[in-house]
Image 1: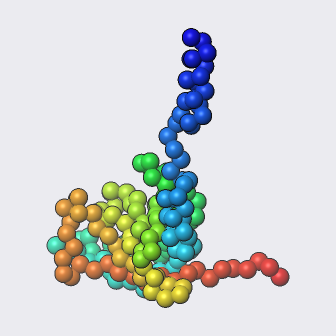
Image 2 (image 1 turned 135 degrees about the horizontal axis):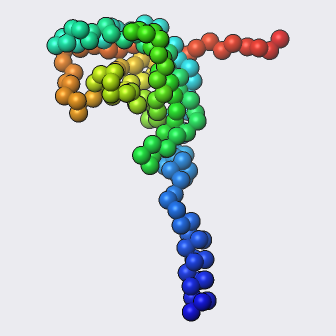
Image 3 (image 1 turned 45 degrees about the horizontal axis):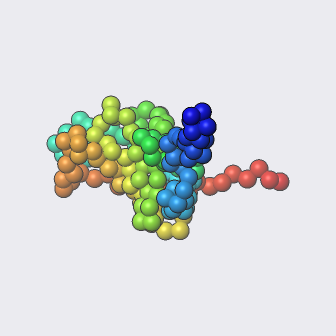
Amino acid sequence: MRAVTCGVVLAVAACGGGPPNPCSGHQFDRLRRYSLPYAGHWVVARGDTLTFPDAPAMSDRFRLSDIVLDSATVVIGGDCMFRGQIVFRRPHAETLAVSWFGQPEQAIVSGWPAELGPFAGVSLAWAGRDSMSGSILLDSKLGVQARPGMTARFVAGRAKRLSSAR
């Protein structure tokens, strides 16, 4: 009996016993391959003011400055994503920790706190070799529907790298 128990324990231990690492395997390798071209520091060059026709007090409330897409991973709800930051200049200087992932046609940045408003995140798509265009995504679960006149687009370019080499 003791030999059977030891055999079962060894079999369970050999199978890993715990949940699989979501930041490894074929699916994550594919996600990483799609995501890494978007990684970097992006500076917003120009953008629309955020306009809510039904809520003018909320319009033009935010001014996005930078988007930093890191290649370090974080597990959220059992999914492996990448870490990042969104930097605002207005209504006051603020940096939000976000998560993101890339797809062939776009990168999705999420993780805005609910107290900021009905925002689900940012969608980024290539607009040139070193620039992206972006859209603010609204969270329909909070009852906000994008309507004509509601704009929130911007263009960002890669931040210039500072060289310390002499």
